[in-house]
Length: 165
Image 1 (tube, rainbow, N blue to C red):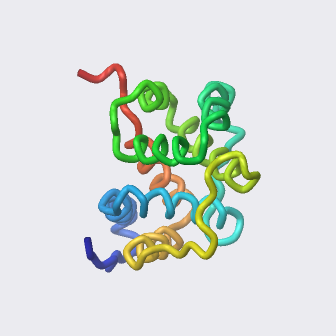
Image 2: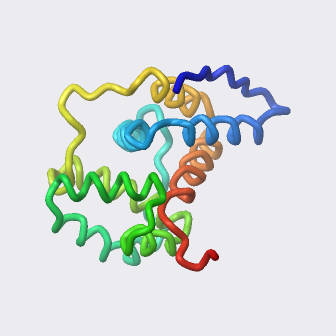
């Protein structure tokens, strides 16, 4: 899928900018979304504002994070793909009950576990696709609150809400 990111961020379009960047993120392939999340969380503190993991009840996610650490790398990757693609599994339903802040913290912790070698790493020399790089640039153009809102929108949409339908 090819698209452009001609998003303008002036005062009258603040909400629209967040919506447009969120839409662009959601248009990416599953693997591009995963790659972009990894880059966002590894860029935390440099060009993307950190989501405050301390504000979330990460202890609620510890069981899932420990379960992930016990999986082999192929299974970990498939589980992350299932989360992004909203595949209905016990794991994605468990994730679906988390609060928005817990979901943000979950992905942050997942990136930390990747850095530590407990979770499947991004391949050496990985670079974002052209489309994912454009979305990354659009996210970088946003202010702190907008960045967090885009990330929150992205991770809220992942998994399966077991209470719907």
